[in-house]
Image 1 (cartoon, rainbow, N blue to C red):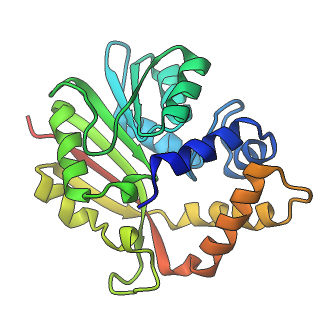
Image 2 (cartoon, rainbow, N blue to C red):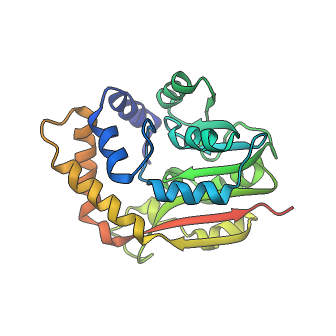
Length: 243
């Protein structure tokens, strides 16, 4: 499993890069200033915002938030209060410096939050990093208030038995895991339209000349991802905590 120390270095490089952030925002259609740490594009973000149905006075947990860009944008649009949790201290400090908001060190299975303390949980492209996917989903359920909503974006193996897909991705089966964790109103839907933007992002990353350290890392990831691109499916999962 990828360590927090690995991501600390990754975020430190990203803070010094304009190439990577500018490319991601342009290709994925994200708002100006949004510091993404994943591949959720503008259309997907709009869909997530609509589902979470937040408003002033409500609380959003952006879990595995990285630099907090998605949660900050949702808070800006809806007026909700934002809590961000990530296992990288460097990412958490960057998020705090940018917003002054409530960002904390924690992880997918141990957020450190009180039970029934948030109205919505967002997990963007990071559930695969949980050592136990069921434990991570149960933690989401625990911190949600009754009737609270969960949105997860991720990838799943196109063929669950395909051993060429990274093991932590193969472990994801949200259609089964979300109900088993106690969620209701579960919907797990393919978002193949998002994939075109992802492929274009990786291809354009490889074409960047004179890459800075963050872009070098992105190019390395691009080669790996593109080699097995069609072995994964893009998924948006939504669910509700029972009342």
